[in-house]
Length: 286
Figure 1 (cartoon, rainbow, N blue to C red):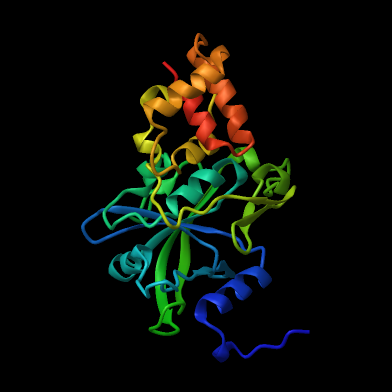
Figure 2 (cartoon, rainbow, N blue to C red; figure 1 turned 135 degrees about the horizontal axis):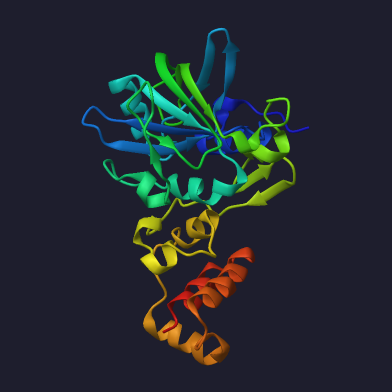
């Protein structure tokens, strides 16, 4: 048994142990708005439900372990005291991951990740239309656990309205756990799909993805590619150059004369194998 004193570990090492051991964790996909009305969207896995009467949710946008910066979500919650917590299912997990990149303040992650902004009924922040359950919340308190990198900030929220996609309900009106198909966060790059188990997503930490909003419209509006597919495509920092695409076309001449739909179908197969670069090359062949 390895016995460790937290005070003798680096914060990054302790952080890694905590996230690897305390898992899987549900994901609060938090939508906020600053005082000027700029929307923000970001996921947090320090999250759970803590009561039903009143209905209370708590999540923590922790200070950055790397540079001790505060999350835009925390700043917005401090300013406006409102947040929408959207749940994350498998259909939107790639787009959710893309939104977690450290885009500058003022960048709209709804657009970057290709989500639809749905107006809320009781608060200002938008809901994620693609999320199967959305909780409109008022922030009742924020508890700050420290001022150094890795310190948590517990945002305590009361649910003032909830929205449930009827497609995830069973005949008795309860949420069907197979239909909702939730995902949760684990250590490193791992997630878990409640009904299937673990899978990995490359986390957008060191570089910023171009975003779904920068994907050419004929690809973004595809009838073949899914939201998860677009999330993977938008998570590249740059597109393959013309020379790389031409060389790929010479090696795979069968792709040259295909219809757009066929190219999208082949690109989707590459994405299923996590080969995003080849998927882009197929899509960019003229």
